[in-house]
Length: 110
Length: 114
Image (cartoon, rainbow over all chains, first blue to last red):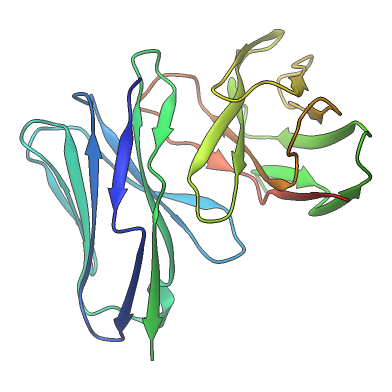
């Protein structure tokens, strides 16, 4: 069946370092969504990418959608302790349901 | 204040007992979802409902049941048939079931079966 894979599963960085998580789908996606879950919290929608090659920025966060619409990435510049959490990508299946990647958990050492 | 509420936040049950988790939304959303999250794992879809009085099985529906009698409410029952029910359960809603709609999540219920 359709799969959405994320790497790495865990990442520890020193505060101020950059961080990137990668998302790969087994099929072409119409769009991709990114969510953030703080420790002990619930997922919160960050952004949606729709166009091939699209790049969107939110302050220190940069989101990219691959040209083939099968992969995506989230890059955080100069991490801060407030960036701690698990970042999920999610893409729609052929029945419209969202399929979530297993997430990348980011730890930031002050 | 619009949003999704889930209650209770923590729930303890003895093995063999059925338990119902509450999910209510006042966002006027048509679609609602139940996910299960295990430590270090992503979100796995249990059931979803695109409209009142209709629901479909997700990827891991065995041992669970739902109802959608009102637009605002989508309770999940974890039955004794669910072999490993201890997990974090998240309810979500979206404007409709279209794939371009973001999902809004409730705070979750952490179920522990003793």
